[in-house]
Length: 88
Image (tube, rainbow, N blue to C red):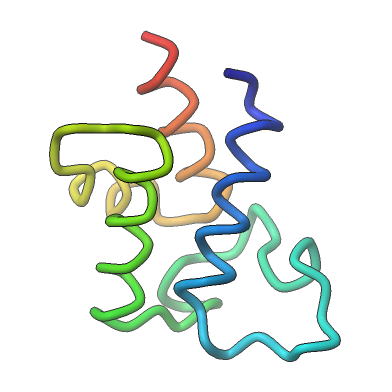
């Protein structure tokens, strides 16, 4: 799976997990790759849980991804982490 394919799916997951997005706002402007999951997006524990669960379900991952997502810190880092993980 390409990085762009992963990005598209991740943005869909983020859109569902993130409740601060303005309805008129585009996904690309709401989730810039350099945005920090906590500082910029302000994800709380429930949003983080929804994000991690969504990643595991959408990418059919059978192990806990929370450490990798937390270590990635940014939207772009999560994209890279998932891309590397599913293509190994």
